[in-house]
Amino acid sequence: MIVIKMREVLRETNYTRISNSYCKSIYKERWMYIMLIPGIIYFLLFKYGPMFGLVMAFENYQPYLGFINSEWVGFEHFIRFFNEPAFWLLFKNTLILAILNVVFFFPTPILLSLLLNEIHITWFKRLSQTLIYIPHFLSWVVIAAITYTFMTVDGGIVNNYLTSNGLESISVLTNPTAFRPMILIQVIWKEAGWGTIIFLAAITGIDPELYSAADVDGAGRLRKLWHITLPGIRSTIIIMLILRMGAFLNTGFEQLLLMVNALNREVGEVFDTYVYTVGVQQGQFSYTAAVGFFKSFVSLLLIISTNNLAKMFGEEGIY
Image (tube, rainbow, N blue to C red; front, side, top):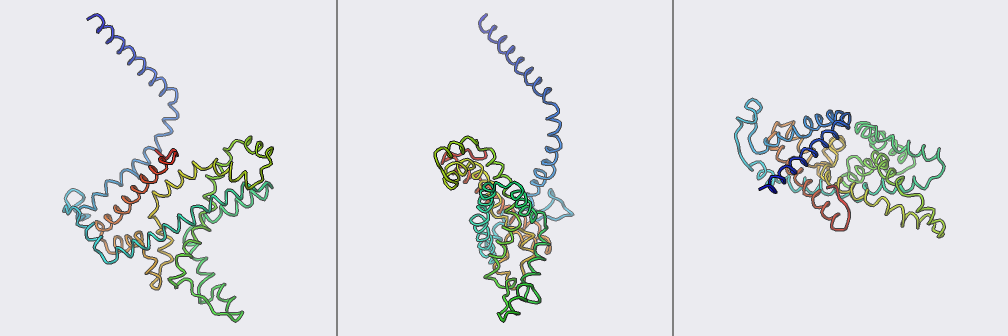
């Protein structure tokens, strides 16, 4: 009996010590916790709060009835979407653009970072970084306007040059075959430079002594790049790839909305533009909420799969 009593006293004493240590730690870092409050409020209001709107996908939502009084229809909107003739066209277009982005756009910032890292003239390196960052700050409206200025058949710079030299004009903006390469080039030009920031930061974290040791061994630039730089940023590349999978089906709503027209709609219509057309313009909120829910669910599965695959190959993953 005495032993049990002593154990209880010790447990209470340890609990009290742990509680006191937590309180002291929180008080010591109180300004850090206070600075977290705006970020937490932001995520609660603009990230977690809107998630409750997903219930709209399972009912015939009527704005004047609200979420509670609208008719509950279960998976009716999902079944309708999967049976729509447009589903496979949207799925194919979205998937092709997503794969093109992963295959061609994702490696581009890595290659640019490796090239920038090899520039040892400081002013030229800074100038190059500034020039490749600038397109990120242009809106898609400006990018689309520049594309039209260069490529339109009616007075475009490229076609004016071709016709003035006796060549035939090319119709890139209305040609379905040229649509996907044009979209990919726009994305790479606008965002690849900005994407180098994370990889350049990862490269600067590599121990310089490794390069010094490689110099002693007589390794050239390519060997140092292959055996030191790339392995040094491998974990960053994996994490960025996993995060990229979360936005795999996000193919750029603004960009496609501006570039799609009646002649290339067959290859340019994707889930995002379909949601805007049917949901906003036609007022079918519940149906398009189901489309968005499906897209988010696929993205979640891709993140989990990619993360597990990364862990299987010995990487850390994102959780």
